[in-house]
Length: 167
Image (cartoon, rainbow, N blue to C red; front, side, top):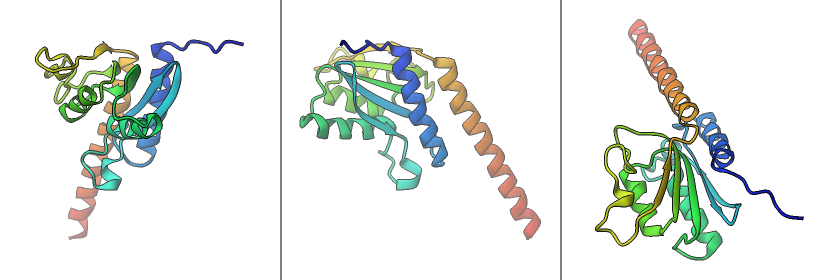
């Protein structure tokens, strides 16, 4: 019996589940999944806030796990699915790890380094460039982030108001 071949939208839905997990932990809702040969080999979700680690981005954690699974620091033949365009730190990691393909959901106009702000993953002077597919479930991925930050701003505003009232 052959295993079904899953498409980019299927895997992005899986990454969104991890973004939900991040959000449930109070983290910025970004999820990442690494697939090789149509199988998940690693997952990650943002954990920077709770671990007090600015490098604990979803992509970084997934790459670390994949390296252990593959017993290699190179991710040859792997695809990374992530709900938000990687920042420059993560884009550099993707180049160094030799991820073959990057698929992301929402653009990040402030720090996106796979085409929005800069395109580190396709820089011609680097020794590796990634195949990139952007905009997969972009609206859903973007809405998840927008709702999170809207709620967070509201919570911060309410907290400040409560502090002023207690003084």
